[in-house]
Image (cartoon, rainbow, N blue to C red):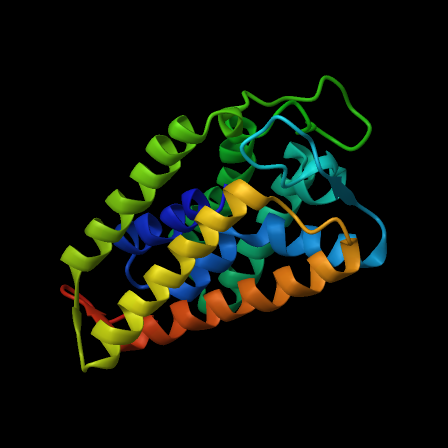
Length: 220
């Protein structure tokens, strides 16, 4: 998933507005960020699989996307946040956001999601096999999350309106392209492009956190 993970970040902002939207998005997308790093290093790989809506992450991804390792990354992310902000509730919520990546990918992937490195069986319910189902489930979650976020925030300036909606449009178009084209077969190029794009998306989210103020409390 892509916008499905972003939706977790937007929903998390509604649940705990004191945590920056950028931090929420980083947590929800952490497994993919790690995959790009491991792909560049040659530790993990993803290949094309014909007959699917999308072929992203079809391959060997035990260190970035297994349940055990995602729990480890979630713990480290949550610990880092706790040491930085001293907020135990926020740390636990971010732990859940990181771990949600595995759950959503099990729903969307064909069976290639491990419980732990080297473990079997590999899991995956194959939502990506159907474009209409992918558009309905993931696209629907994305629309709901955007609506929840917009209704809970207000713009401080034109940036909070124009740049926000431009960002939403770009992320949506990128998602539509991804579910039809899949991943670049060159692992280094895919990893670099993915890291750049996702980093820009997280940076945009931190920017929007300042440009759009939550109704009830300021954000950090």
